[in-house]
Image 1 (cartoon, rainbow, N blue to C red):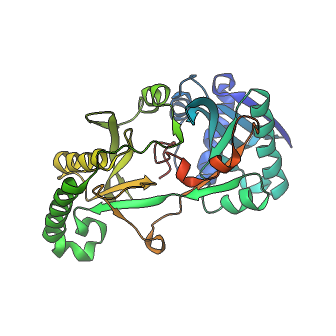
Image 2: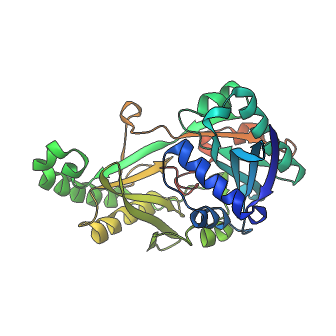
Amino acid sequence: MEFFTKSTLELSYEELVQLKELFEDVFNRPSSVDGFKKYYTSNFIGYSYHTLAYKDDMIVGSNSLVPIEYYVDGKKMLFVNAGGTMIGKKCRGLENFYDMISESFRFLKARGFQAYIGFPNDESYPLYIGTKLMSDIGKMYTYVLPYRIGGVKRKLRVFNLVSRCFCLLYTSMCSIFASKKVVAFQIQKAHESFDEYRYRHSDYKVVELNKGRAYYIVSKHEGVRTAFIVDVTEKSAKSFQRTVREILKREKHNMDLILYVGNLPFSSHGLIKVPRKFEPKNFFFTGRVLDNQAIDKELFFNFNSWDVNLSNYDLI
């Protein structure tokens, strides 16, 4: 098996078709060439990188690398957000997986990237950690507000009125106690280069705040009409609480649940933190430092250092 890394713009149409077909085979979900190109060109340099595994002149594996700028203690650095990692069913094996990811590291180091982050699923997480290709940074939390409980659990629909009243009362109480104090994470996305491209090609909606913005999208996930809060750029309880109340106002007829995934180091944000044992999905957050001179590993692998959430490329 051979491994090469190309930019999105360097991929031929035949390679794009092969990646589409591989994705559909591995993840059992529809894909498209146009969708692939839009997804991986929606960043500040206009393309991503893709480590490709070839066998008999056919693509049998891929690891996609999206460039993203982060501030680390105020200093701008170049990271990649890895995703779409896949290997065809007939070619799977620890050696092939290890070699493909190692090629990604080699390529990125040669081009001056400082760090590599990823959000592996339940299947790939043990491989990354077991091979020491990546290390744990943390596991994101899930926060919800069940506006219409019957839409989440059909047998509870008789309590829809109760859940709606509870949500309105709860968010009103939060508005009284929510602090305006902004949390300054030591590692955070460079929003000036990130937001302009991240939300360009989808149905994201915007909530304008006193300082900053919130982005959300309403879609049906596993049968539940969900308003996903993707990001709130100013991290304060007051900003989150205002975002939640605005979504309730706008989308009360279109959604049953509000959901946010990330790490909120404050209370009275208008959402309810789901206990670990009841979380619907694991949101693993892993990483690897590529430039040991540029980044303090103790800081990098401290989950509380990070501003991280669903804006990191559609984790649902």
